[in-house]
Length: 257
Image 1 (cartoon, rainbow, N blue to C red):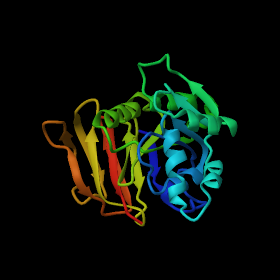
Image 2 (image 1 turned 135 degrees about the vertical axis):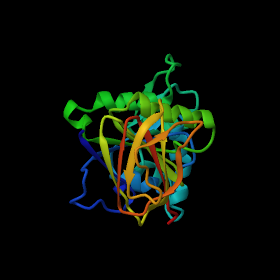
Image 3 (image 1 turned 180 degrees about the vertical axis):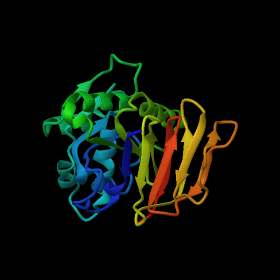
Image 4 (image 1 turned 90 degrees about the vertical axis):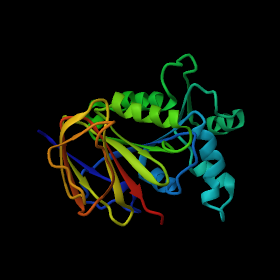
């Protein structure tokens, strides 16, 4: 089974030059409170999208992260390349501001069957070449917290685009999918994440999951809702390995800086 490596080095001020895996990042901002480290994600990303009302968050909240700077300068500096969604949340003044700066506005109000995050993931998938797709990692800011149905919708996007690297982020934690098609190495960044973590089967029960590097490792364990799931676990080593016969959600806490 092919090995897939994971790292949260995008939470570091500078990604080490020898960092593996070497990824190209895209950032999607949703309509939830911006994580405090959003400027860092923005710096690392090569493409920046706002999902509908996420543009309001960038316009309103990004200047609050730079209280000693002119808000208009901050807004001009943090200009998304794309605003995409069904346009039921973004304000007209915000849309006009970014459109005047050259932001592409993609109105998909005719599509009410997919979420705004889904629409943005499709844009990134279609925007990148076939070569880039295997190397791109999508960071989703404001994906957790707020309405539970929104959170579940965002997690569903992980499953619908299981072949793509997508990481859901809030101030407190991150979540991404560990596809059952691979065995996984998770390289922990102890200065910015942990120690609390969890592994949760998604889509189907796991008949066999094995890990190393956790305080409570799993040894060919079954996991399912209504039975055992590995929540409130703790990372003990800087490399975690996971092998499972089902897709799993990996979550880990993000430290307050």
